Image 1 (cartoon, rainbow, N blue to C red):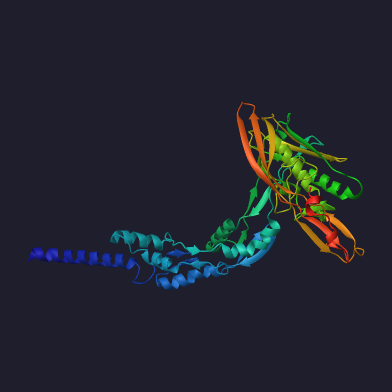
Image 2: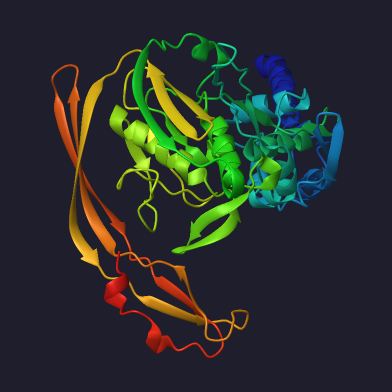
Amino acid sequence: MAFLARVVPSLLVCAAAYFGVDAWLRASLPRPDRVARGVRVGSLVADGSAGADELARAASRVLDRPIALRLGQATLAKLSLRELGAQLDEVRLRERLLSVGREGSFFGRLVDAREASRGARGVALHVDAPLEPLAAHLASVKERHDRGPVPSRFDFANGRPTEHVDGALIDVGRTLERLLAEALDPASDGAVEVAVFRVEPWASSEAVARIDRSALVGRYETRYAFYGAEAGRAQNVARAARGIDGLVLMPGAVVSFNDAVGPRSEDNGFSRAGEIYKGELRLGVGGGTCQVASTLHATAFFAGLEVVERSPHSRPSGYIGIGLDATVAYPTVDLALKNPFPFPIVVHAVANAGNLTVELWGRERPADVELATATIAAEDFERKLERVPYLAEGRIVRKQAGRRGVTIEKTRALKFRDGARRVETTRDVYPPTTEIFLLGPGADEATLPPLAATST
């Protein structure tokens, strides 16, 4: 009895201590259906009495937070993520909120809950934001702001390269990432700078300054009239020649005639002159530009460059041999050339007093080129009659001479400095040119000569 009298009180004390500690430990765990005290979600901190649904709804208000969208010193707009179609994954958020202090062993859950009470447990907000709404919002800004890079050229008059200009493009994807980070950061100032990335040109001023221009890679000349009624066309030839002068083709690079010369407009230095449109001669701004494109094409063709894009005229041209012409129309019909050689090439184009010269300069002349052509098909032209009231009674005027259409086969044979040879065969189709007669009132078409008699 004496022994029990001594032991029982001790056991009672230990039991009381044990169950007291156990109760205290269990009280440290989150209550059923409540988020553990101290859990952080955004700027919110759980007090232990809030449910996951309540906290998730409160956290979703970040989608309505207005964020100022800035570009430099200008504020473009104030937008919220909800306006941009963003959605908070509340199901995932509730699951994560209720997981704190409820996963793993008893001791692990206890440690997790104690860490949360000290502010060391945060739950991330998962927001899904589509790119299209922001892209639509920034479309007009991109149109005004975006600019392509301007590569350096070689200024033959001054003997030095021009300064290149980097391009700048608004990055919608990166801007959206910044908006998300700003909206979800409770310590942010509520403003985001639109993301812009720099685009370097393929030919920098430093690279052009180092180009070896000691060898003539190719040269071709054509003639043009430059006085009287042809003054406008001569102006266009000179303007287009300036557009390609100094152009640099880096190894492997493709250059576009249209990109280099720009729109054929009076604002861009072009004049009205005769041009061929849908097989007929008419007046249009930029007539004569095709002669520059054709001369450049011929120069590149005999220099061994790769012709990536090129279209022949609707009829053979009088200023250049058949198969060497190249028609261009901004921005749809282009001449594109690629430099296949391991060194840069510089274009030098000069139009002066009726003589257009295009040269290519580089480290060496890599190939000798020969051209052979053969007519493999021909097609007769048709006649078109137009009755017009402004001609005298019975008068007949031939507006346009007819020309037979031809299909030619071109063979370019290249012999390279290392002894290698390559032969390329292509075809050009020149459709027939319709013969056009204008007939005044009362004119008798039976008096016209037979169609075959006027064939050219």
